[in-house]
Length: 490
Image 1 (cartoon, rainbow, N blue to C red):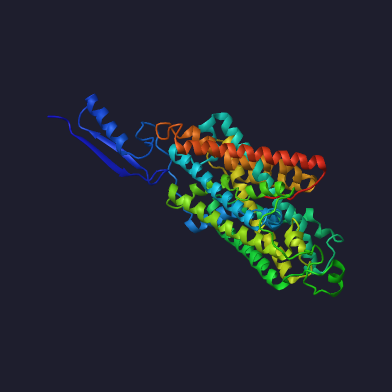
Image 2 (spheres, helix red, strand yellow; image 1 turned 90 degrees about the horizontal axis):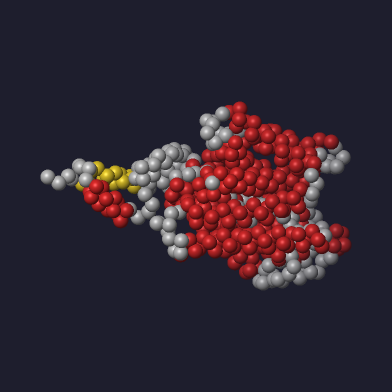
């Protein structure tokens, strides 16, 4: 009697969640039956076979507990950066339609980049950016990825603390009717240390990123309040054409801005000037969230590539709407005279704007712990890859990072230019270059041939990232050579 052959499909809850595990039950040991059964499996199975089918170690099990909504809050909070305050300035130097079109293109590219990351994570069963680097490029790739993540997120944390350092003394001084420069307890350097110890450190010591979903929701609520206030102020101020600075100070209502009034209440749909080349890279990096994607994926409840891609798409879509509305109404309030820091255009004595400043401060403060998590994970993957979780190490890394960032913000006055270089190199690497390299190196040629359209797309995507990096660095060095300044921010 011929041995029986049965192919049993069982849905296994492994790293891919929706990936069916192939179990071949053979009633005999004839080579022809083994070959036939493997051929049937390869033809039937739509994607790359799991490790179990290839005789390798099974994927690690990820038992996430963070809901879809909380994951959206965390990823949206990771996307949202201090650069939102300068988007109206970017629109003033690109035009309304050109800005929105460019912002949409960048949002779509960022979503595609996350698709590449999730595809690679599904193929090899890895949920760490650094391990993907090691799988694609060897040990050197792991070091490079960890260094890029650390540099980029330290720069982002520093930009948030710089906002706290500059804005919090003004807000407290206005509320207390005191001079921020005259009292020692209103010094920005002291206040960022207090905020770091009392607010940021306790949140950064949480073991799981999912617990920060509530603070991320509060942070996004604060930025939504900022957006609503910008829209309200547009209709309250109206068109202020015809007023000059002197007339405003003497006759204008107290809630009008004291400087920077536009000479023409005319919106430009398309604008090309020298400042455009400084604002475009800032817009391009407005959706950097890639170091946080895989940690959030790990803690997602019922994780699957499709579910995590939906989290990313909802987060990116929400941030696109918030960015677009903030830039549009901010620009339509002040037109071509809008400054890089839009809040500086409003009156310092306006109670609503004072509340907005406080909300922005709260938002960036609650974002710092979310940005710190990938740095700590990168350091642990790099320095302690085989060590079990340890509370002393967990706490020590958080303390070390916060001390480092506080020292940088306090002691280095020109840190904006330093992190400008870091942002011009790490951001395109995280968005464009590394995901495309991972896809080209990790996805096997049996699944996607090297000349297939998906891999050609990934190659072009990486080349685009190299061009972004070259353009950003080129104009930054040109800016330094001419002694001009430009807006910066995450």
